[in-house]
Image (cartoon, rainbow, N blue to C red):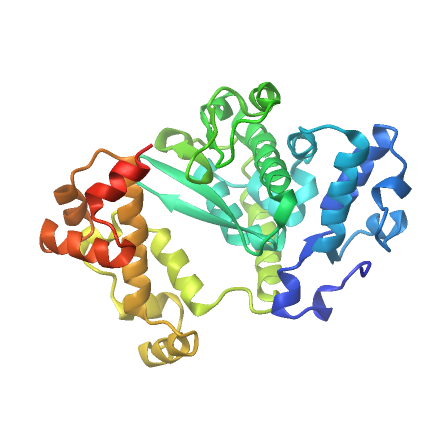
Length: 353
């Protein structure tokens, strides 16, 4: 395993397989406080404590993964992920943390977090899903992370809760946390960190904020600091090799709109091309190079929205068809069966939460 890696040394593939050095360093500090020698936590790696105390850089994700495995072995604490995340304050997240702290509203802070999430957590992916009544930050793997998946989700979400406490004060108790894994034996520890709005065995891992909470003005808002920190985040983002494919950029644009974005008509290729600062001809060519098309992306978003409506709402099939801009319910039902192999009714019966 390699030690500290410089950003300029990485290809796009390699960037998706690293960890920002702050997080393994924080895990090492936690272990030190618990009386676990650094050598034990760094067993089967070739990194030193001095490497992890460097002010910048990355380590391979496999190295961080080994440290997590070692930490569970020596600390014997199942709630380790939640505990570590609760100790990661705003400053641990670098310029992203400072930018979030300086935002005008909580909605601005979560939008900023979604955009620059990759500069802090390359192996995970954060998507912002917007509906008429709330916004949800959804967490997924960018690469398979194996046995440490729950640890990463717990540590990231508990850290975001701590940051939200700093931004919102007592109002952060209104945040809702959903996890896709079964309720762990230490769920009472969850409630001490996350509050009472926690549920397990859900379809997705996400943090949900209602519209009132989103519009909360932040007491620490500071426009000049925000602009400075945001510009530094943007600079870091532009230096990430192959950060996002064109298809991924389009999906992010679509998901930044209201959930029933197709109700007012299918977003045009021209409008999306303008947002990406490229011609429609170039956009088509780039998508062809990624083995997809604008039409396929739109249909996939329709599919994802349809599945969400069927599993998470009581909207009728006709109402869902209207929201997704289908001519009628029967046309929508045929399209849905083509997408999933099931009728909307059968899918709802099998997946309704």
